[in-house]
Length: 186
Length: 303
Image (cartoon, helix red, strand yellow):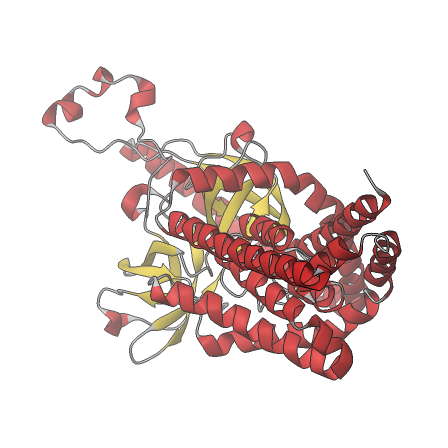
């Protein structure tokens, strides 16, 4: 196993650990009332930050698996949370290069927009299949909390993912073609 | 030439990524469809994942919850004096109620003995701790750290010290999923006291679930007690649910008795409804059935 592969696996493991931490924190029975207004979607924030900044660390299969675990642990319909997370992550990863040039405000705006799209997608799937769904307007509180949490999450994750990414970049310098294919998400 | 080869490789990689994404989308939709039709395999998968991952959730969620508690306790610290005074007054009131309750209990026991009333089947329970809050925009549920090994069954009613909290909708070996009364999927047959008129308590992700299908809604009044009716055989009858808290033109809402603000420990009831008398022989020959056959199975029952 080459150094680049080890660095890549370490990056995946770091991302998965961060995502798991986000899931566990969002499942913690804290706050005023169980089942009260939802807080920020921490997992979305983590995935969005990593997808927008180090897309190589957030492959869709891993994002999908993480989303599915959240769906299975969190209750409710299975699959649509993972679907929304994967689509949003892929879209942010596809824009990563452009976002790097445009700066943080553009990244924040796009992440918030995809958070809204992810919620709307889940709501639409529930509504189309005649499953009970909350009124679309009631999702605004959670969306706002997610959007406001994103900069904090980006600040906290500023070091860890980039460090992993640089290590990966150094390790893969000798394998340019593979590196290009891998970084194609950006 | 090398550039053309690189471009071709990039195109292939891009096509593969698109195909992979499409496959993941299809898998997600298939899983969603299976969960919508309540496929038991999906529920088993959910239980297995909860069993496997709940301990590590607790490792993170436990300290986070403790930190939140410390912050809450610090806020409440300033109110301790007032709370103490209030509690002393409350104790005085409760002493009076205790005396009244003891008198009523004695009277009740005498009347039961006189009437030779057959008491309801003995109700057991298992106490568990809420270890994770599955609350999100699309659902209201929680994980409880007791499961099939503790005798928890699917559909069992869950209460706290004050009233009904919800029901069990998925059972793992060591973890169960509790569907709160506020969840969109929650429907509980209730009766409104003292008239006993029937209604359905429907969760809608608000703190005050709706009372729908109320029989004779004209007689409803604010403050009337709500308890489970036992209709459908999922919930035991007469568990306190809450009170009528709001009356609208077309619907009413309930304020729940359960303390959702401090839901730490809950009791999962083990209750079996008595077998209905389907034939005259059942009435005159109750000993015909084996004792365990006198109870209908709870598992797999639906509201």
